[in-house]
Amino acid sequence: MSSKSGSQQRGNEWYLFHGTNPEAAAAICASDFKVSRAGSSTGTLYGKGLYFAESITKADEYAKPNAEGRYAVLLCRVIGGRVNYTDEVTPDPEALVHSCIEGDFDSVCGDREKTRGTYREFVLFDSEDVYVEYVIEYKRKYKKEKD
Image (cartoon, rainbow, N blue to C red):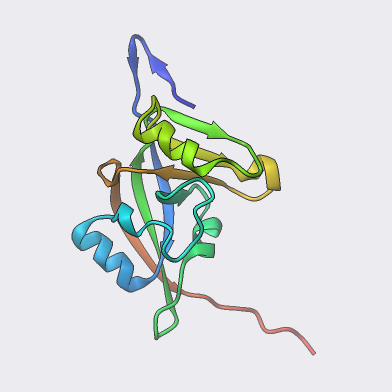
């Protein structure tokens, strides 16, 4: 996943989505992501980190409504660096975290598209590698079924 240009390795800069709620989105914009809160409202299949998706549909799965029924998704600029790719159905989250915190990698790409036909997820363990570009707030609208 990393690419090289001459002798310099690029930083693997991506635009990725992060699903949340409007209040948490405002807090993230005011004070940054908190890795210590990672996994507090969702799972940690790839370890306790900051989860992002290249699909807004996947990010919407993590979004939560506020009292007015509005959801939030952040569009973030992310530096992935050296990526630890995994397509394991049940990866070892501790090993993945260790590979980034103590090892040679900067992020994890969990390829659920390959293993489950859903979406790839990207996990980072340092908030310094993430910059929120946009906050997208929305309400879900469902089509009414015909009788």
